[in-house]
Image 1 (cartoon, rainbow, N blue to C red):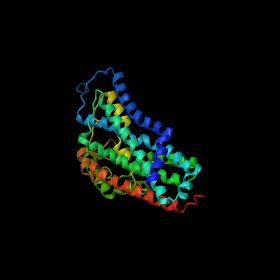
Image 2 (image 1 turned 90 degrees about the vertical axis):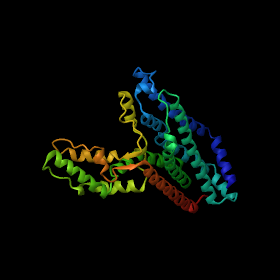
Image 3 (image 1 turned 60 degrees about the vertical axis):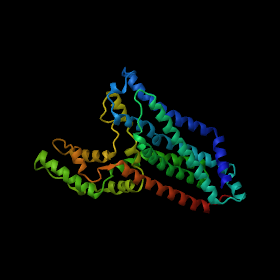
Image 4 (image 1 turned 30 degrees about the vertical axis):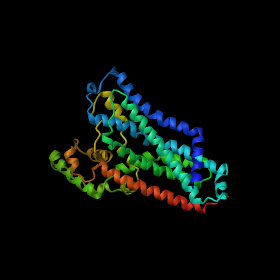
Length: 353
């Protein structure tokens, strides 16, 4: 096993593509930092200080988190391109047959490939985070890791990417066609937005809807008197039976709930507004709340707005980040095990020769 790991790492470090990927992981966060400073420059505030911007500690934490967390959006596509092409050479160059002929077991071959690819993915994430943190620290905005808590959030994102890396590695060892595996991996990455939309728009339970209907109908009675009340059964349609299992069983909603929206950041900096730049310890499932608002406000003579006190009465509309981290980490570990176990079971039966 040690010999296989040594061989795989040798191949990785010898590859020129690896250094291109490393450069990307270092340059991408710096471009984000430069973009933020460019916005301030265009506003004629290139020499502005944090005090002039009126950014509080929460705002600085938000911007720091935006810079270091965006690896979760950028690196999956890099991994989807690299892993199938790199491991696919094992079939073309006969490396797998040679490893078997040398006496290595299929488990050792499979595990060594997974270990090296996972360690590469984690290393790229760390480079991205480190460079991004140093970069934003050198600006007039500054940085704040929230006493290290932010690194735990980043760890949750990394753990999810570990599961994705194991999946790509398993597919690459099972499918001899590098082009075919690459297409599947890229399609998987581009499906993130679709599954994220499904998961977040249906991230509610029966209890959540029951509470929402109660709060909504109270507001309805207050604003419009005898208007027709909301029927909670309306929420449980075909979309819910598809989207809710995606939310419960996968990490599809992780990016939407953890990674800041680039549009909010740009708008806030451009308008010098800070209401969007809050680094909260709670997640408000805003896609879910927005879907409810648009669904039921169109048939009314006016709009019904729920304030934070109303939302706090709705079970599941808000969740502590620490609780979400635990759930996402568990799902990442489970899916990593599934991808590894199923991948190896199929690889053990695969005809290599």
